Length: 431
Image 1 (cartoon, rainbow, N blue to C red):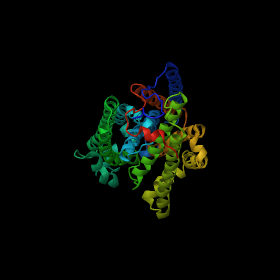
Image 2 (image 1 turned 180 degrees about the horizontal axis):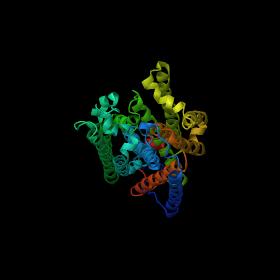
Image 3 (image 1 turned 90 degrees about the horizontal axis):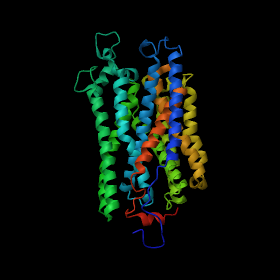
Image 4 (image 1 turned 180 degrees about the vertical axis):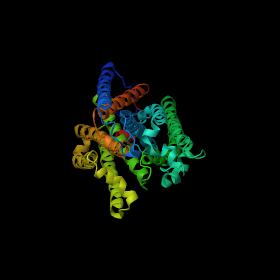
């Protein structure tokens, strides 16, 4: 279809994952590993582990901080990976034509999912008692002085059909099922894409549309429950009825920023010639719009809890706003994730120029990492948290590992869905 008319684009393009790109990413990985190592050494010799932590009055150990960091990065980068697959599926469900040349870029983020699943499950088995208060069996023992009626009431959600306080069967089962299905759908999409490249025709597009619909229904349920399980259950007493949406919005903005950065990176290397500033503008609009959507959810959650002022709800914000460690980050969070993208991307030109988008998307990735840091650390580390060498190092290690896996996956197949029935529409896309 694309060969009629005056378009002479190379549709059999492959991304060449060159040694120099690998070397740059490996450099970041090594720097991250060094910082992480220094952070661990400092935490081990830091001397404040004799201090009683807030949770249950136990002594604080340096490895708890390591576990909390693993958890933040697992959740954050899992989100980016699944959002790549989600945004890909959305294009088919919405029958979108503009995005045809960048579909493979979105899908490539799913390559991280199998690794993310393994990391997530392993981290949970190693660190569950240090991350999740509800994993302690004494909370469910009515004879124990530390018995907790509220947590006991929520126990079945984690332990069913086993006895509360034993092995969280239900919780682990959900985690495993979500990752298995996410990886299954990702592989399904990859397979149909390959067939379309080889055989052409429109039947693959229709097939992809129905598979996308199944995936989106599953994603709607699984992403919300994952948010409750992996993040909200850290503060076991507390709950928020729009928390699933909130985590999804943070994931979505991070995923969109990563997709946009990768598209701009590939264009800068001379790939994706048919992607022009109209396509970039569309990505910019998504990033701009969903940054505002995230803020709307942040504000909705905060305002209702603030206004109702019910102790079991407001405790969440009180412990973050009154803490010397976390309160500055609440303002950093809003500044990086709302005010900055809002003011910088407001004009049409800013959304069409790579330099503004690169800046904003890079800041948003850091900003939403801070958002997850604020969701996880106060409930796991209390006043022993903060952002130091360990946090920066772990973020760089994870980020570069994800980059290696995503780019490695991207290099294996055609960059462009050359037989996509809407490529022609995408060439003539003007906004």
